[in-house]
Length: 496
Image 1: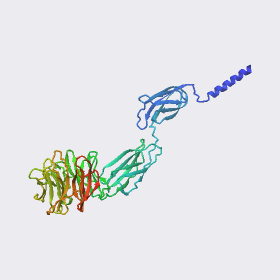
Image 2: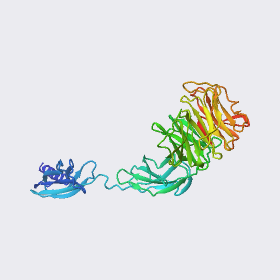
Image 3: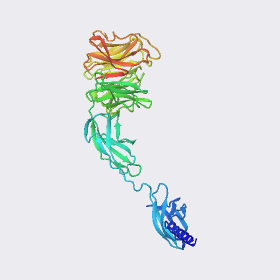
Image 4: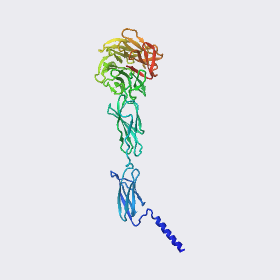
């Protein structure tokens, strides 16, 4: 029995020794640890940081001033830690001495302090100094990040025409499609990468040049989202290009082949003014400012190029004005004698003759006549007829004049035309030609212009209900049964 008791005591002593071999704490005496936790670089005090020891004794949290005190810590060696969400944990080796208050200050940094920025993006497409780039182009780049962070991108775009910089932000893919670029323009692009941790990293800057515009000789308008937008197309009605913004009401385009410019009307507040632009829609410039374009029914008002593209003629109520295409040199050159409004103008550069269409406040009492540069009436083409008329256009040699007239003679308060035909007047005394002999009944032919070779006429055909779609058509003067629809859902054509 005695041997059994001795053996049990030995076993108990061995067990106790083994059990105390892990994380032993010397309880020979007690000390304390105090200190402060601040932010790296700024010494800003950090509140609510957890302070603990390993081996574990007690856990405390810093106050609003960043101070802490850990009391009654048994003497011995410890690892003291400071931890708070969003910050990098900090560890400090300490030795606690009985009856001594040890002081430890922690400096903490943000959790991502060790994060590395992304590498600069490598631009892939289009290659640097690419040419003949389409107006809609997909930009492509490649990139890597040493910490595999999620990246977002900003594409910076500018061109050599001005100092404006466009930023396309929030891109999450390594491709981005640019749309609506200008023809024949050099662009510069760059990709800015961000990991939302480090400073953004810029790529190299690449350049590319867009293609030259196609030779679109036909310009016209189309109603888009409540505004009239100017377009151009080739002579088959294809390669259609929008030239003005959807946010602007732009109409009545008139192309000048000699200068490569297109003049047009645009709403500016409550007024209508003359503008010019390049044939690709670039470099839009307001021409009129002091005196705007005004008169009966703005959808009927027309103007004319003058002086080989150096000037423009336009109406304002009963007055005819001339202005330089640069916006200078405004002058009045004619005024009606009966107070009727000038609605349409066309000048022949070869003869100097100006054709005018005037009407009363309701659009009727129409007169179509010509004047010389001194404002003297030369010949009256149309007068004393009932109904609406207009759409004047002089031939290249000045011997013929296109115009339209509602042969029904209808006059009403909403200016509805019932049977508008296109006519060709011969100044030499020849017979007037009715171009609309094959026109479908119940429709109107409007806004005629001679084709560039004057073998045909381009015009608008639409139902006389005043609300149906308008289609641009052409017809040969020598074959009036050759009516062909060229461009659908469009109006106000010009073919130069």
